[in-house]
Each structure stands twice: as C-alpha cells, then as structure tokens.
Length: 168
Image 1 (cartoon, rainbow, N blue to C red):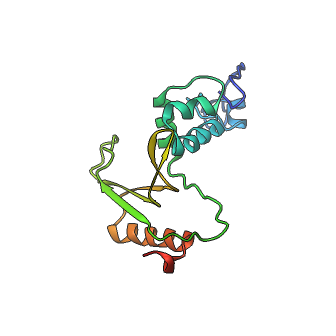
Image 2 (image 1 turned 45 degrees about the horizontal axis):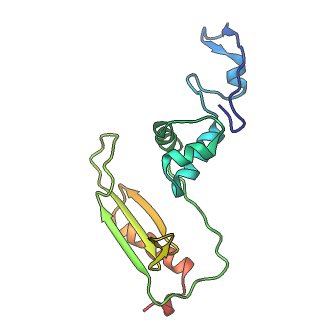
Image 3 (image 1 turned 90 degrees about the vertical axis):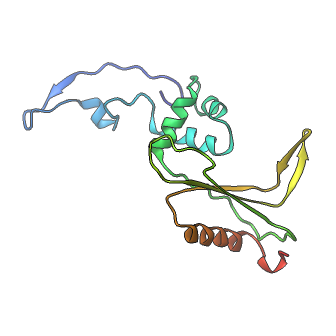
C-alpha cells in the first residue's frame, strides 16, 4: 500500500548461489521487508497525523485505503519517536503559561515496567465550537527519562518559544 493506493506486482523467488539464501530480488531492490504490506512513506504519514488527531482520522488521511487503528499503533511503534518542529517566527509574550505533568498517563502495552510521563504546556483555555480547548498547546511524552532531564527539556522549550521575562 502506498500513498497513491494499492500496487500489485508479481515476483520470482531466487536462491543465492553464494550463501544459499532465498529472496525476492525486486523486494531487495525496492527495500521492501519480508512481511511489509505498507510503504514507509504511508507509515510516516500515519505517525505524523496521529500526533494531532485520533488514530482513525490519521489512517483516513494517510492513504486512499482504509487502515485500522491497530495499523496506526503498529506504525508508531515501528517508526518510533517523531518530534514535530514548528516554525517559530518570534518568541511569544504571555503573562501566564501553564505547565501540566502527569505520571502513568498511558499504560505501556509492550510489557515494560517504566512509568510513562506526559507534559503539556499551554496558554490557558478557550472556547471553540462550544468546547473548551487548550490554547497553543505543546505535548511531549517521556518513557524512561529521569525527572531532571524532563524538566530541563521543558525549560528549553519555554526558553526557545517564549519571552521568559514576561511570564509572571
């Protein structure tokens, strides 16, 4: 599956004379893994979309074919951490900046005993379409980092994006 839709092709299974390994040459040339059914570009789009939207909406935007929410989760696990860099034109001036942190926000599904942490920084709440939403929110999840490293990362984000002397 590609961003343009499904592609079907036939291939021949070859045995290497050098090491006796069996392979599909066309898969090797296109860097397609043995059990890959989804192109890397689609997986990356799934992950990028999932940062801002639900898994279901992410799958609908990534390619013409409908993918399951589980496929989006698998893509996130495969691709790994993706940091979204937003263009910063000028540091913002705000009087109040909210920093909220929560431990054990999301249970880990891979069996690790680490405690995930979620930090979000925002400028307060505003009403949109009859609902309260956070203004200019920035989310970051941490798994396995020391608390000191998390707070240093938070301080660096604030320093990079806000005029600290204006924050009360």
